[in-house]
Each structure stands twice: as C-alpha cells, then as structure tokens.
Image (cartoon, rainbow, N blue to C red):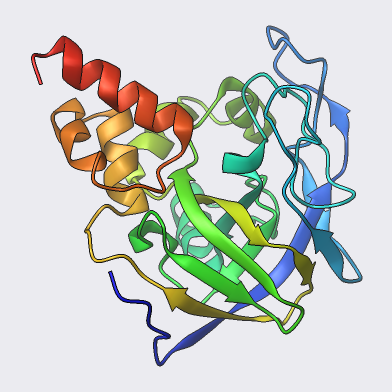
Length: 232
C-alpha cells in the first residue's frame, strides 16, 4: 500500500452545519435532530470529536448530532456526499435538493464518493486538514421522515449511493471552494459502495471487508460477528 498523490483534484462545494429542529420521526429516541444542514458562510474548524458516547458528536465545530447513541464520534466525524449524486436524485425524485439536505457536512464535486476506498485519505484545502474514509452512511428513520418520502430507506438502499463517513487524521479548517486531493489510496478494493452493499443487502460480501484496516470499529465488529456465525 504505497502512498500516492493522484493527478486529479476535486473540491468542496459547501460546508454544511446543522439547523437544529424537532425530530420529524415521532418514534425517535432523540427529540431534536441536526440532519437539516445549511451552508456555512465562513471557514469551519474540523477536529476529532472523540467517542460516539459522551464525545463532541460531530467533527465540525458548530454542528449538532441529535442522537449520539447512533451517530457521530471519531469514525463518523464528517459526512460527505457528492453533488453529482444529489443531482441524480433531483431527477429521480423530481424535487430540488439543496447542499446539506441529505445531512452531509461536505457537499463535494468531482470525486466519486461511492468508489472511495476505506482508508483513503483526503487532504482538503491549505490548512492541514486530512480526513480518512471509514464507512458508508446507513439510512435511518429520521432521514426518511425529514425528506417525507414514501419507502425512502428502501429506495436509498437500492440506489447504492450512500455517501461516506470520514475520520479526522489531522485537524484544520475547511471552507467552500477548498480543493480535495487524494493523498493516499490503499491497494485493496473495499469501497464505500461495497461496504454499503455488504451491510444492507448482500451479506455474502462481508468477509471481503475484513482486509480494510481502516473500516469503522462498528462495521468491523459487525462483519466479524456475521462471518464467525457463518463458520468463517
């Protein structure tokens, strides 16, 4: 796995922070949610938030995680979603989707987030920020209730464009317009899309995930349990 800077550059279209609102899912454990995110007008500091339980929640200063039992923490410090995928959803859903509407902290351009490999490192901007891809997003009831779309979790799962969670390797500021450069890409083929399919619909793929050392702790433990229960 030799480090390499690739010869193409993507960018951050917007940096999005929560506009805290009442959770639209009446059955949710948390009565408030930060899924509704809007573009920040200035640079935002990003740092490791610590444990999912009792930590700072989001990796972005000024952001809010509603349910810290399931979301946030070091392995889910930053959520990125591609503008290209939002554009495709706009056509399919026949409605406008603004940056941040999927709850993403970073709306990106020019990078195939679904094909990003677990352990891939993104250097963003010029302030030293380095993030590492750790897991796909899995859809929850709050996501479905916020968008108010019938059978949204099934639709989102079938599309296989989940966006990526990233952990913070080196803290720094991020702002709209910052370049994203792939500083490092592991030599395995475990992508965000592959992990999502293994977790959501194709469990036979789970053994393949275990070669990815940077996989989130929660997903690694899940994969190991399932593989062990099936006899290895």
